[in-house]
Image (tube, rainbow, N blue to C red):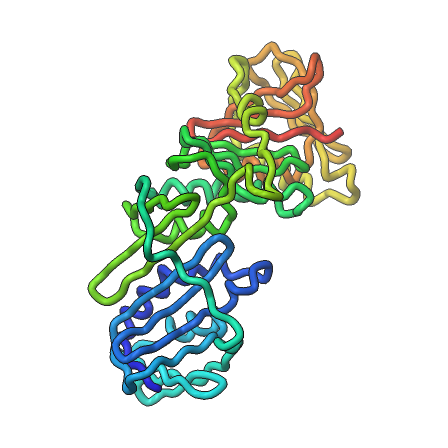
Length: 366
């Protein structure tokens, strides 16, 4: 069977529906795409962690029948993006697919047999309980300035997600690294947990898109003159089996801004830490002491030191990982930063860093 489709429409639809950042070896079905043709429509099914998407495009088939194939998602998307003819024809053959574009012909092999595997589809018959407007720029801020802190080891799997509260609170962090970031960018109607795949989804959709709540899931629908996209996504919840508590109340309390703090320029501190990394020969060289005493702030390790005068009567010492400290500073979108100690009794055990848009907590070493 052959199916002819407008190239621009297919490119635009797959640009929204196939999110390259969500193609992952940890979720095998995200690596493939299922393409199904009928006489007058082309259907593309895509899956990612917590996400099911269906694209429907207008076009014309040459048979009164149905043909379906599962191919490599990245290969299909990259090839489609490279074609510049007005139309292209998808030819379904045994064990693969030909894509005809002008005088060119490309062969894509089948990855899985549709008789053995079918990608899941989003719900179609549902009752909407509420709607939410998604603001991609807010989620892009979270992706750019907070996602670096997300846990990557599954010792505490709940922290491999973004915690979103009902008051726009967003926490991203790693309990084992004692690193947490916080912003007020997460406009959502319920407290839940988002894997990184959902953040990637929210940053890729058109501004002002709305999602409809159906039970614990949400439906995103986009319709144009040439195609339609329906995506169903399912957040995680702390009462789900094998998820557990994020301990958000405790973390939010620790992220409160103290009344006493110092304000520093980020650039010279980052420069100093970069310089110390040049000299680092051992693990001891990869940490430094952050010392505030008698109105003087000193950063020092076995090889280097940097001092400046600050307006503070406070006194404390915290030992930080140079790499983590640099990552914290580099993910702020400001030239200046406020810093205050986090204390356990009389001892400083870390610091809280903040600007008007972002707050970060980093514990010290030892």
